Length: 255
Picture 1 (spheres, helix red, strand yellow):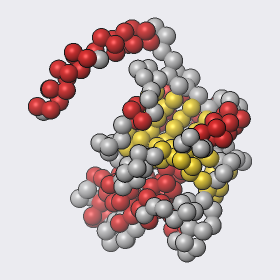
Picture 2 (picture 1 turned 180 degrees about the vertical axis):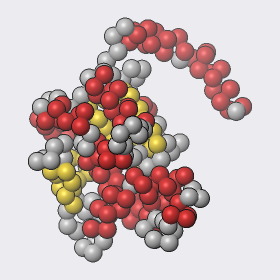
Picture 3 (picture 1 turned 90 degrees about the vertical axis):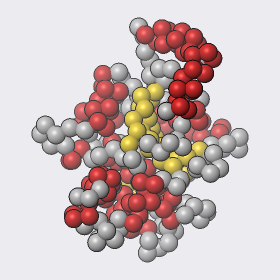
């Protein structure tokens, strides 16, 4: 707490006045541009690495950057993630949803171990809310991951896109740069796009191309950020060499 208190005092003397001006500016006319799902990992600082400002994004964080599939919430059962989707995309008419995974994700590292049936047993899951959360809402990511094991990730995976008739394929780490757990993290990130598209209250916007879903992936130890390019069917690093072609793709696909 001493570090937090000192940080608050530094904030008061440096950036508070600037932030208050920004708060007042967006008070009566907030125009957030994205709903941003990411992990609770303390190393993930999305407003810093996207250089976004006050009022730019709704940010939702949980262990493993999961968006539970709509079939998990029948009747009156609810969860924060779909509520955030409705608040952002229906109430506030935000047009872009972003899911951002990352390397060395402790939740995903645990998910990799949960491939062991005994470790993932109901008895063991009852001992751990985190284990239960990952088993309940990330099994589809494990299923996708298992599809890639026999061919050593050399064949593409098929994901459902924004509507049942729209699909996209993905090559996962074709250059073999990342660990096996990080490959699972990338698959898990893409699986959330499919989960988001399962919500009926988003269907019309998705069908009319008034709402778009994207995937980012952050490499913790290099600081590089990757964008999933549907044109190139893989995660591509956002850098000086690739920026122009990724920017063009975003303009063509999502404008």
